[in-house]
Amino acid sequence: MNLLKINEPVFEGDYTMNTGSLTPRIDIFDNSIPTTNLRNVIILANFDVVQKTINTNFPTAGDWVDLMDEIGNTTYSAASIVLQPGEFKVFGNQKATLSNEDIEVENNILKLYPNPTSNSFNINKAVNEVVVFDLTGKIVKRFTKTNTNKNYSVTGLNKGIYFARIKTTNNKIKTKKLIIK
Figure 1 (cartoon, helix red, strand yellow):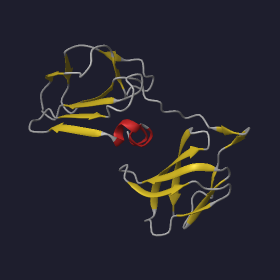
Figure 2 (cartoon, rainbow, N blue to C red):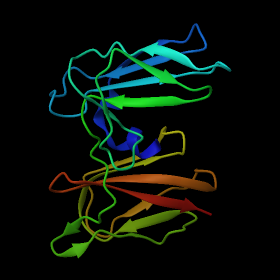
Figure 3 (tube, one colour):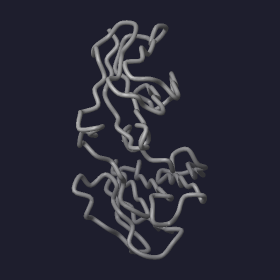
């Protein structure tokens, strides 16, 4: 979920919440994103102790992707779904663009080091932006337009696990785990 929130631009958009029942709904959207990309995310949950049939009310027709499906092939288009007690679903109008592949930059792998660190880290290539998120997805540090082997200070951050979203000079994005000790 955290990588989804960190890597997908739709989460920088707007949202509406309907939380007045045991079957809450959250709609996350960014209408400036093309419909060929992930621009709508719908979260449906059942906090009741019995099975519930929930109206999907997808904002657009067609197949919606289960974003929590690791393979990413499960789609829904039905007007309603059945959720078991405690179950939730996260739907998107398109597949997420998450990737575990390393980005090759000029035939070299992008590296963040040292990791773990106590006060700063380096990146072995020039990048356009580095954004550090805590585990809740909150931005805690942002660095822009930097040079190769630039030192990024993380002093002032508590010990723990963070995510560094790195945007390369050719605008590819890679998220790396960052441990502050």
